[in-house]
Length: 175
Length: 339
Image 1: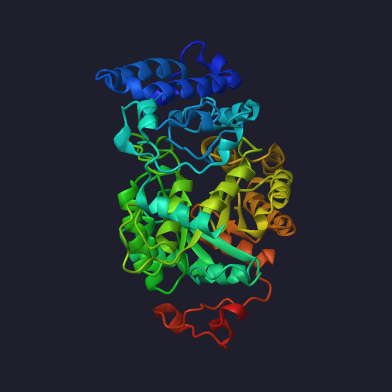
Image 2: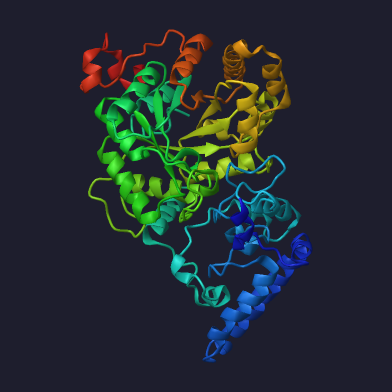
């Protein structure tokens, strides 16, 4: 259908695919930036405009590289450096059953399935490869259009619904 | 597997699976109608040959009677339906509410699905919801059952009892990831699995080999999806237009070579052959029949395939309306272990 190619999930900026196909660079860069950011945040966070500035900064850079949809709770390193929110179904726990035989998306026939790519890339990664197995909690839609770096530093993105926490808590206790 | 885990909901499907018998489920095509008889007519044909009737939730993103509506009708008549819940159309508030409503109506089996995309259906202009994905939905359904709370942590006065199902498609890429995704679904709470249509036995065997290596077949009941193809035209339509359906060329060629009048019978024959091959694969616990508006054919296939053997086909809930018309003989069915 003509409208489907205009889905924002389907956009890929020039050069971004090449970079994502080399996820070991990206995961190292992520690990480094994470340490740097978390180390500097106690100071940076006090600067009033910093948090506001992070939103367009993230939107621009991650938007270009990963077609970031600004969910505000980034899991890129756990999903093979491929943004799960660029899956038209927003699946965060793996591919749906509709993947085409050539590995393309059910919704956008010309687009390689985000999860097929995520799987291949995660196999190349060394630091976060195993995180593909983690069950990702439901997306907190209230964090849409906020900075996931700031949310991470402030621990907002790991605040899970009480029921979800309870279920995980009991499961860990029983094991 | 059956001894260690407690009975989840005690549905007929669960009892049959836990007793180690080969289970049969079938898909009921929800009518485009407000007449309950349209549901009952199809259910009557299917109920004689299957342990669980799946009420589809807008299959192929086409609008039909809701799965909750179908299930409400089916439980009233004493059937044991499988409520399909797709993430496509409802957000987390609606889904949790529907799950409680379904449990109150007597639904014991719930199948958690992602759902076909709206672009495949009759109303592609619709909004995609996908608030949950299927794994999160499974986990939330299990949380409601085991913890007795909503996602917010608010307590349920009476938690629902569900035998939880999930889907798997061994026939779509990434093939290496599929068994691991199955493992994820089991961790999230899946008790049984219904797969996409199987027309490719070697690929199913590869998948099942990996499943057995991971020990997953001991943690979950796997029902492999099958269905008859009416002609090579239908086969070609399905493999190009229906998402996630893989039909090898051999099957299509075999139908294409068959004279026009015998195509339907050949399709049924292929389906029966597949069932008999699937049955031999270790770790497979049953089959799930899907056939769009061909309930009679489904019944014929199950009978001719011989998977039910000498199993009695009575209802196991004698107090219900329709079951009362055909009172079950004997009493062993009352005891889940002796089913």
